[in-house]
Image (tube, rainbow, N blue to C red; front, side, top):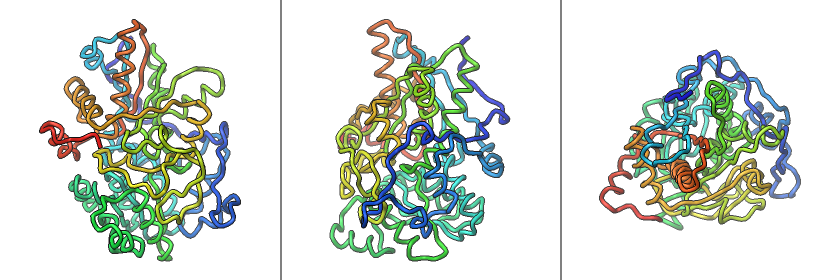
Length: 432
């Protein structure tokens, strides 16, 4: 039975998040001074206690608080689409599906964890949260979430994206947060970087350092991270869990699951429930992580302990990394400009549960235009990496005659990315 749009009732929304650490433990974060596993209490000055507890939990399923589910219901369950028009445009026998996370108020998957993190901070009396953001999806999602729970929010936005995507800044302001370009003069580390590199385009590593410094120096402030950490990946599993329920309404099941990867949260969200079933021996679904060639941590980095930020204020994380001092080119997929990848995603790639590939910027935008002109949705540049891989896999099916089912996560819309599309159409978009 073919479906163009597969919807669930809000009562079918998951009541629990899936925690892959129960089935695939990862190496613990290390204290950089001692190289010993980090004491959770050492993280309490910057993180909410419940989030620290989730970060190290080995409990397979963690209950989603009802207050969080009630806000999720503003847009969840999100729709799963069968991409009939894209299939026709490609002339492929493959069946292509995409989970549309761009329907959230912030236009991406990021509120799945932002709502949860703001909620737990509110419960513990946090008055203010500091954070970083790459392209602005996370910053806007956390701004929305803090607004709902009455928490002040300060966002350090990577400088290149701050100016490339001015309306992301406006959206962050609309929901009540303060946003500044990073590096900024508001922190000691920001001032140091501006003095050393006055023309820097910034990086997520720099912005994270600023946000952590802000939280560490202000007693009423906690820090929130939109990707990479275990608890962010945990919260995102609502995406994959919903998708599995939606596939139960069809005669299909994905042979391939694809997500773009910067820090790794949306990729983890859509794929971890499928990896759970692979580990249990129930399925053999291929999982593909897609990153930019300009910032290829999974395909060009080293799997080792490294800092999550440039100022080396974070614990050491075992991950694929290009080095905490790496500043990537100012590509338009700002959400993928991170030097490392989630320890969970990194472990999955290292242990061959997940494949990784990288694409150049122009070919990604080629795929975005093909998708937009067939399916009618303008995708974010980040999500377009997943689209590119899905198209490539569908073309392989055309060449071999195989009828595979392909799922990718459309992690966000591109309504705030028209400046980059303008550059693409005028030929001014480069690969780096």
